[in-house]
Amino acid sequence: MSGHDHGENGVNRRKVLECMTWAGTGVLWTVTGGVPRSLGIIDSAQAATAVTPGMTFLQISDSHVGFDKPANPNALGTLEEAVGKINAMPTKPAFMIHTGDITHLSKAAEFDNADRIISQSKLDVHYVPGEHDFLDEEVKFYRERYGRGSKGQGWYSFDAGGVHFIGLVNVVDLKAGGLGNLGAEQLAWLEDDLRGKSKSTPIVLFAHIPLWTVYPEWGWGTEDGGRALEQVKGFGSVTVLNGHIHQVMQKVEGNVTFHTARSTAFPQPAPGAASSPGPMKVEDAKLRSMLGVASINFKQNEQRLAIIDTPLQG
Amino acid sequence: MKILNRRDFSVDFGLSLAAAILLPATTARADDMEVHIDNFVFQPAELKIKAGTTVTWTNRDDIPHTVVSAGKFRSKTLDTDDKFSFTFTNAGDYKYFCSLHPHMTGMIKVE
Image (tube, each protein chain N blue to C red):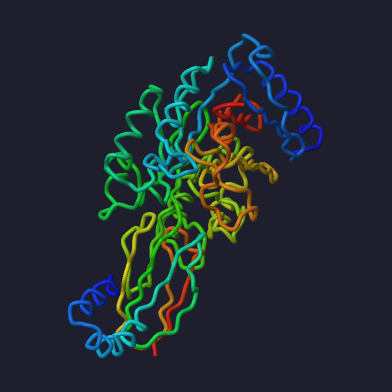
């Protein structure tokens, strides 16, 4: 991929972004020459009336239904606001992915409440579990609800709009002193799943804990994530979408774009910015600017998917 | 809990008796140890105890944690202020960790 192509991509993407319409405000991210940069906050006055071309899907993450601590006493309420935000989007997303920590403590009522709110989006939702979704004694509530048709601990793949989506599980069988974990069985399945796929097929990998090493001191990374990334290296377009760290982070390495989404429940501090990665209490007026969802747009012949992070407010 | 029970007991039996009872009781009580979970850290991270000691972990974070020592003991998920106790009857080094946040590790050395 040449520098010239990078430049052309940037122009194309900017055009795409200019066409996007949003009811509220959103921070637009574009990636040119490997450096992600914000295009700033747009408001509805700047938004054009054209409908976004290509396929758009939504990422929602870390809803932590049941969480009621000072950082956000009503996590169910902010999830409902996020779904309201999604329903107000002028371009109806094709579907949604949820990158885990649906619930806070894996209680049946928490799963029921999450489902009641998320189903108001009337979108198909593809889930992967977070460590907070496997806390019930028999580890059955998540699997009963979302594990159907999946392999192993809940991994699976599907195709949509010409993109191959792969949902991975990296929150099981974690080793003392280590990070997130995919395991040999899942990596073998992944190799099998990718076998015979054309290298021009855009790939989206999604999992709860970042598959890249964000901050190992807080466990923000996946022990054998590099082995999964090795398997998709040859593909022309790879997008890795994660949650877990409750903040937006993005980087680009070659053909691979890494991105983490905000939580809809509570923010967490930037790596090393606090004594622990625990829930961060911010002023009430600021909370909704630190919660939100991500919208991902794919256009044929565009190497990189355009990702837009939309906070609940601001 | 134990401290309260002993105090009730000694009040019932009068002061002089209480002194006699409290002396051995103090020694026994010193055997019960506590580990707090604060800011995703086990404190103290390493504890030296005698065999027969009961250790109680208390989660003081806003996030659930677990206390797991492979093949030795495993707590349920501890929500905020939940406790887990384990009595160490055999000498040895017991490494443990939080199975949700595996970068959290601790050690109990039993003599």
